Image (cartoon, helix red, strand yellow):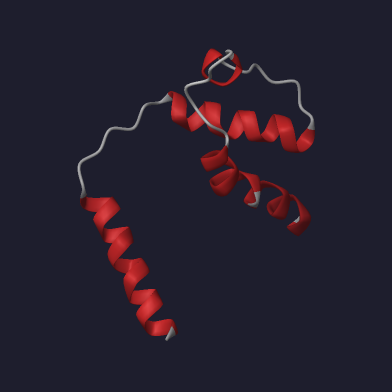
Length: 77
């Protein structure tokens, strides 16, 4: 069972590695900054995408990607 799961994840990784995509530079900084500010109570600058009355970005995907690994990496040190 674990071999099938591993093979599936390798195929998904290859797909994302080889598919053409567009990565906006702000995604590399704004995502971790928002989550680090909430996890560690850092004073961060929340951009308008997260703070307007009807935000255009959700923090849910960021919690999945950064929310759990950030505190876990601090515990290891």
